[in-house]
Image (cartoon, rainbow, N blue to C red; front, side, top):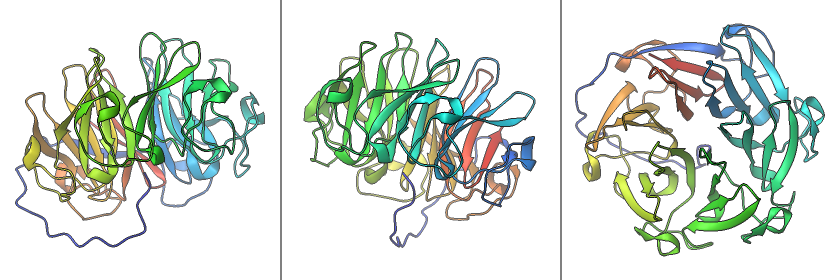
Length: 346
């Protein structure tokens, strides 16, 4: 989620040593907020949020304040794939004729289609490989929490989205505090959490509780990872629907590294998982990128706690404005949306 309008006083605890000298660079965009299609840092974004990457290295980005979906080719060329800059709405249609209203999350399916959480339309949109935008679930401007098929379903400002190999779409229904599931046929059900009941309980399915869930990511075994923004934790939903807390402690914010429940986060927004089970976290208000190893050890990969900025460089020397979305490619490279820029960590 975007940073909340509140002031949080935080005294950092003892931080663990860096486990990587990962180099941070700026892939696209610059400090100026607008919309320019160009190459690399000559391009401009307003507020990029969710992102997804294809096998060939093409990067797709939700530019939330510009109301568009952008595309970064492996050559670094940025173009607008769908929507029109500054023109919010809910129209389906081909590419630039489509309209969005503060889109947030993005996921790429095996067939090349993109799925978008169109937050202020309270809908889930699909962008076909040829650029045709359709609404697959929810009805524009009708918010609520209703399971059902297609337009009969209702959401409340959905944020994160993920899609599995079978075409099942998972949605972080943020202001309903739930995780929803959309079958390839368009039927929407509630997978975990209970609408209107925020909390932090682990458990099975609707017995679990979340507090403003944000980013989502799937691993190869079908486990779903959730950046549970309001709880300052990272949650895990197993294929059988069992929800557990992977790292952090509900209601205890901070920037400390360490084993699972000892670690602390500050409004995490994005998650990604690599082929060997490392989970990466965009720790939004800490202005850092965190890593959770398969054994549950949390470390800080890049940035420094509560030291915001836009500097490129190795590990702790790098600075982030407020990382939001994160995705990992096949080689382990990380792409992060950060303020009006796209950052690369290798």
